[in-house]
Length: 302
Image (cartoon, rainbow, N blue to C red):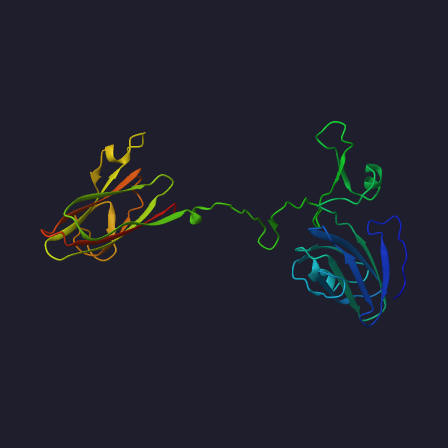
């Protein structure tokens, strides 16, 4: 496979390999339990014409790896030039390095990535000799523990969740507002007895509300109106002070807002409303108990 040698008194000290006119250098690096691997390269003899990075879950099946910092420079690394790359493993256990050069050259490389999950077994002194970071356990007398850090090509600490493509920290919200919504059927009445019916919606943690009412009657009318309250104490909704908000608190998605509705309608609560309670009020006045109404509601936190 070519020449191996040890270089001293140089930052890039490590393994060396001769790269001839064809793809004669192929190295497999074990990366299990690592979130990334950083490798320093020094080229001596001729320019590289190409360099490929592949990753795999085993040491026989590899695919091209897209998340590599510094790869563009390494692909055409000039004679007597050096560079550093960082490979983000994305759970892959093995990394394959493939180099090409038009003429014979010596490529020296040193793997400097650290294990983020756990360090190899051994004493703290042995870990320090391997270049790993040693920290003490918080419990007295525990003997210490081995931990590692990962640095980028500028020797800056890599923060967990950092997206190098977007140069930003990825933040995952476990319970985002977009996941907070409740859909419910408030009523499904067929041939309801004439009278007044009230249905309540608690708007705590919610700022959005939609109401759909499907209303009909054999004769007479079934009328729906909406009332709101910001009274937020221990009172049950039946004892809260409500005020009518049918026309000015909601937008009619099917037409012009009105003071009440006697036919099918879909309403959306205006965003500036900050309510504790919403009351949906149905008044059935058919004369023969022939009123029908189905009411759906959706509350959202956005």
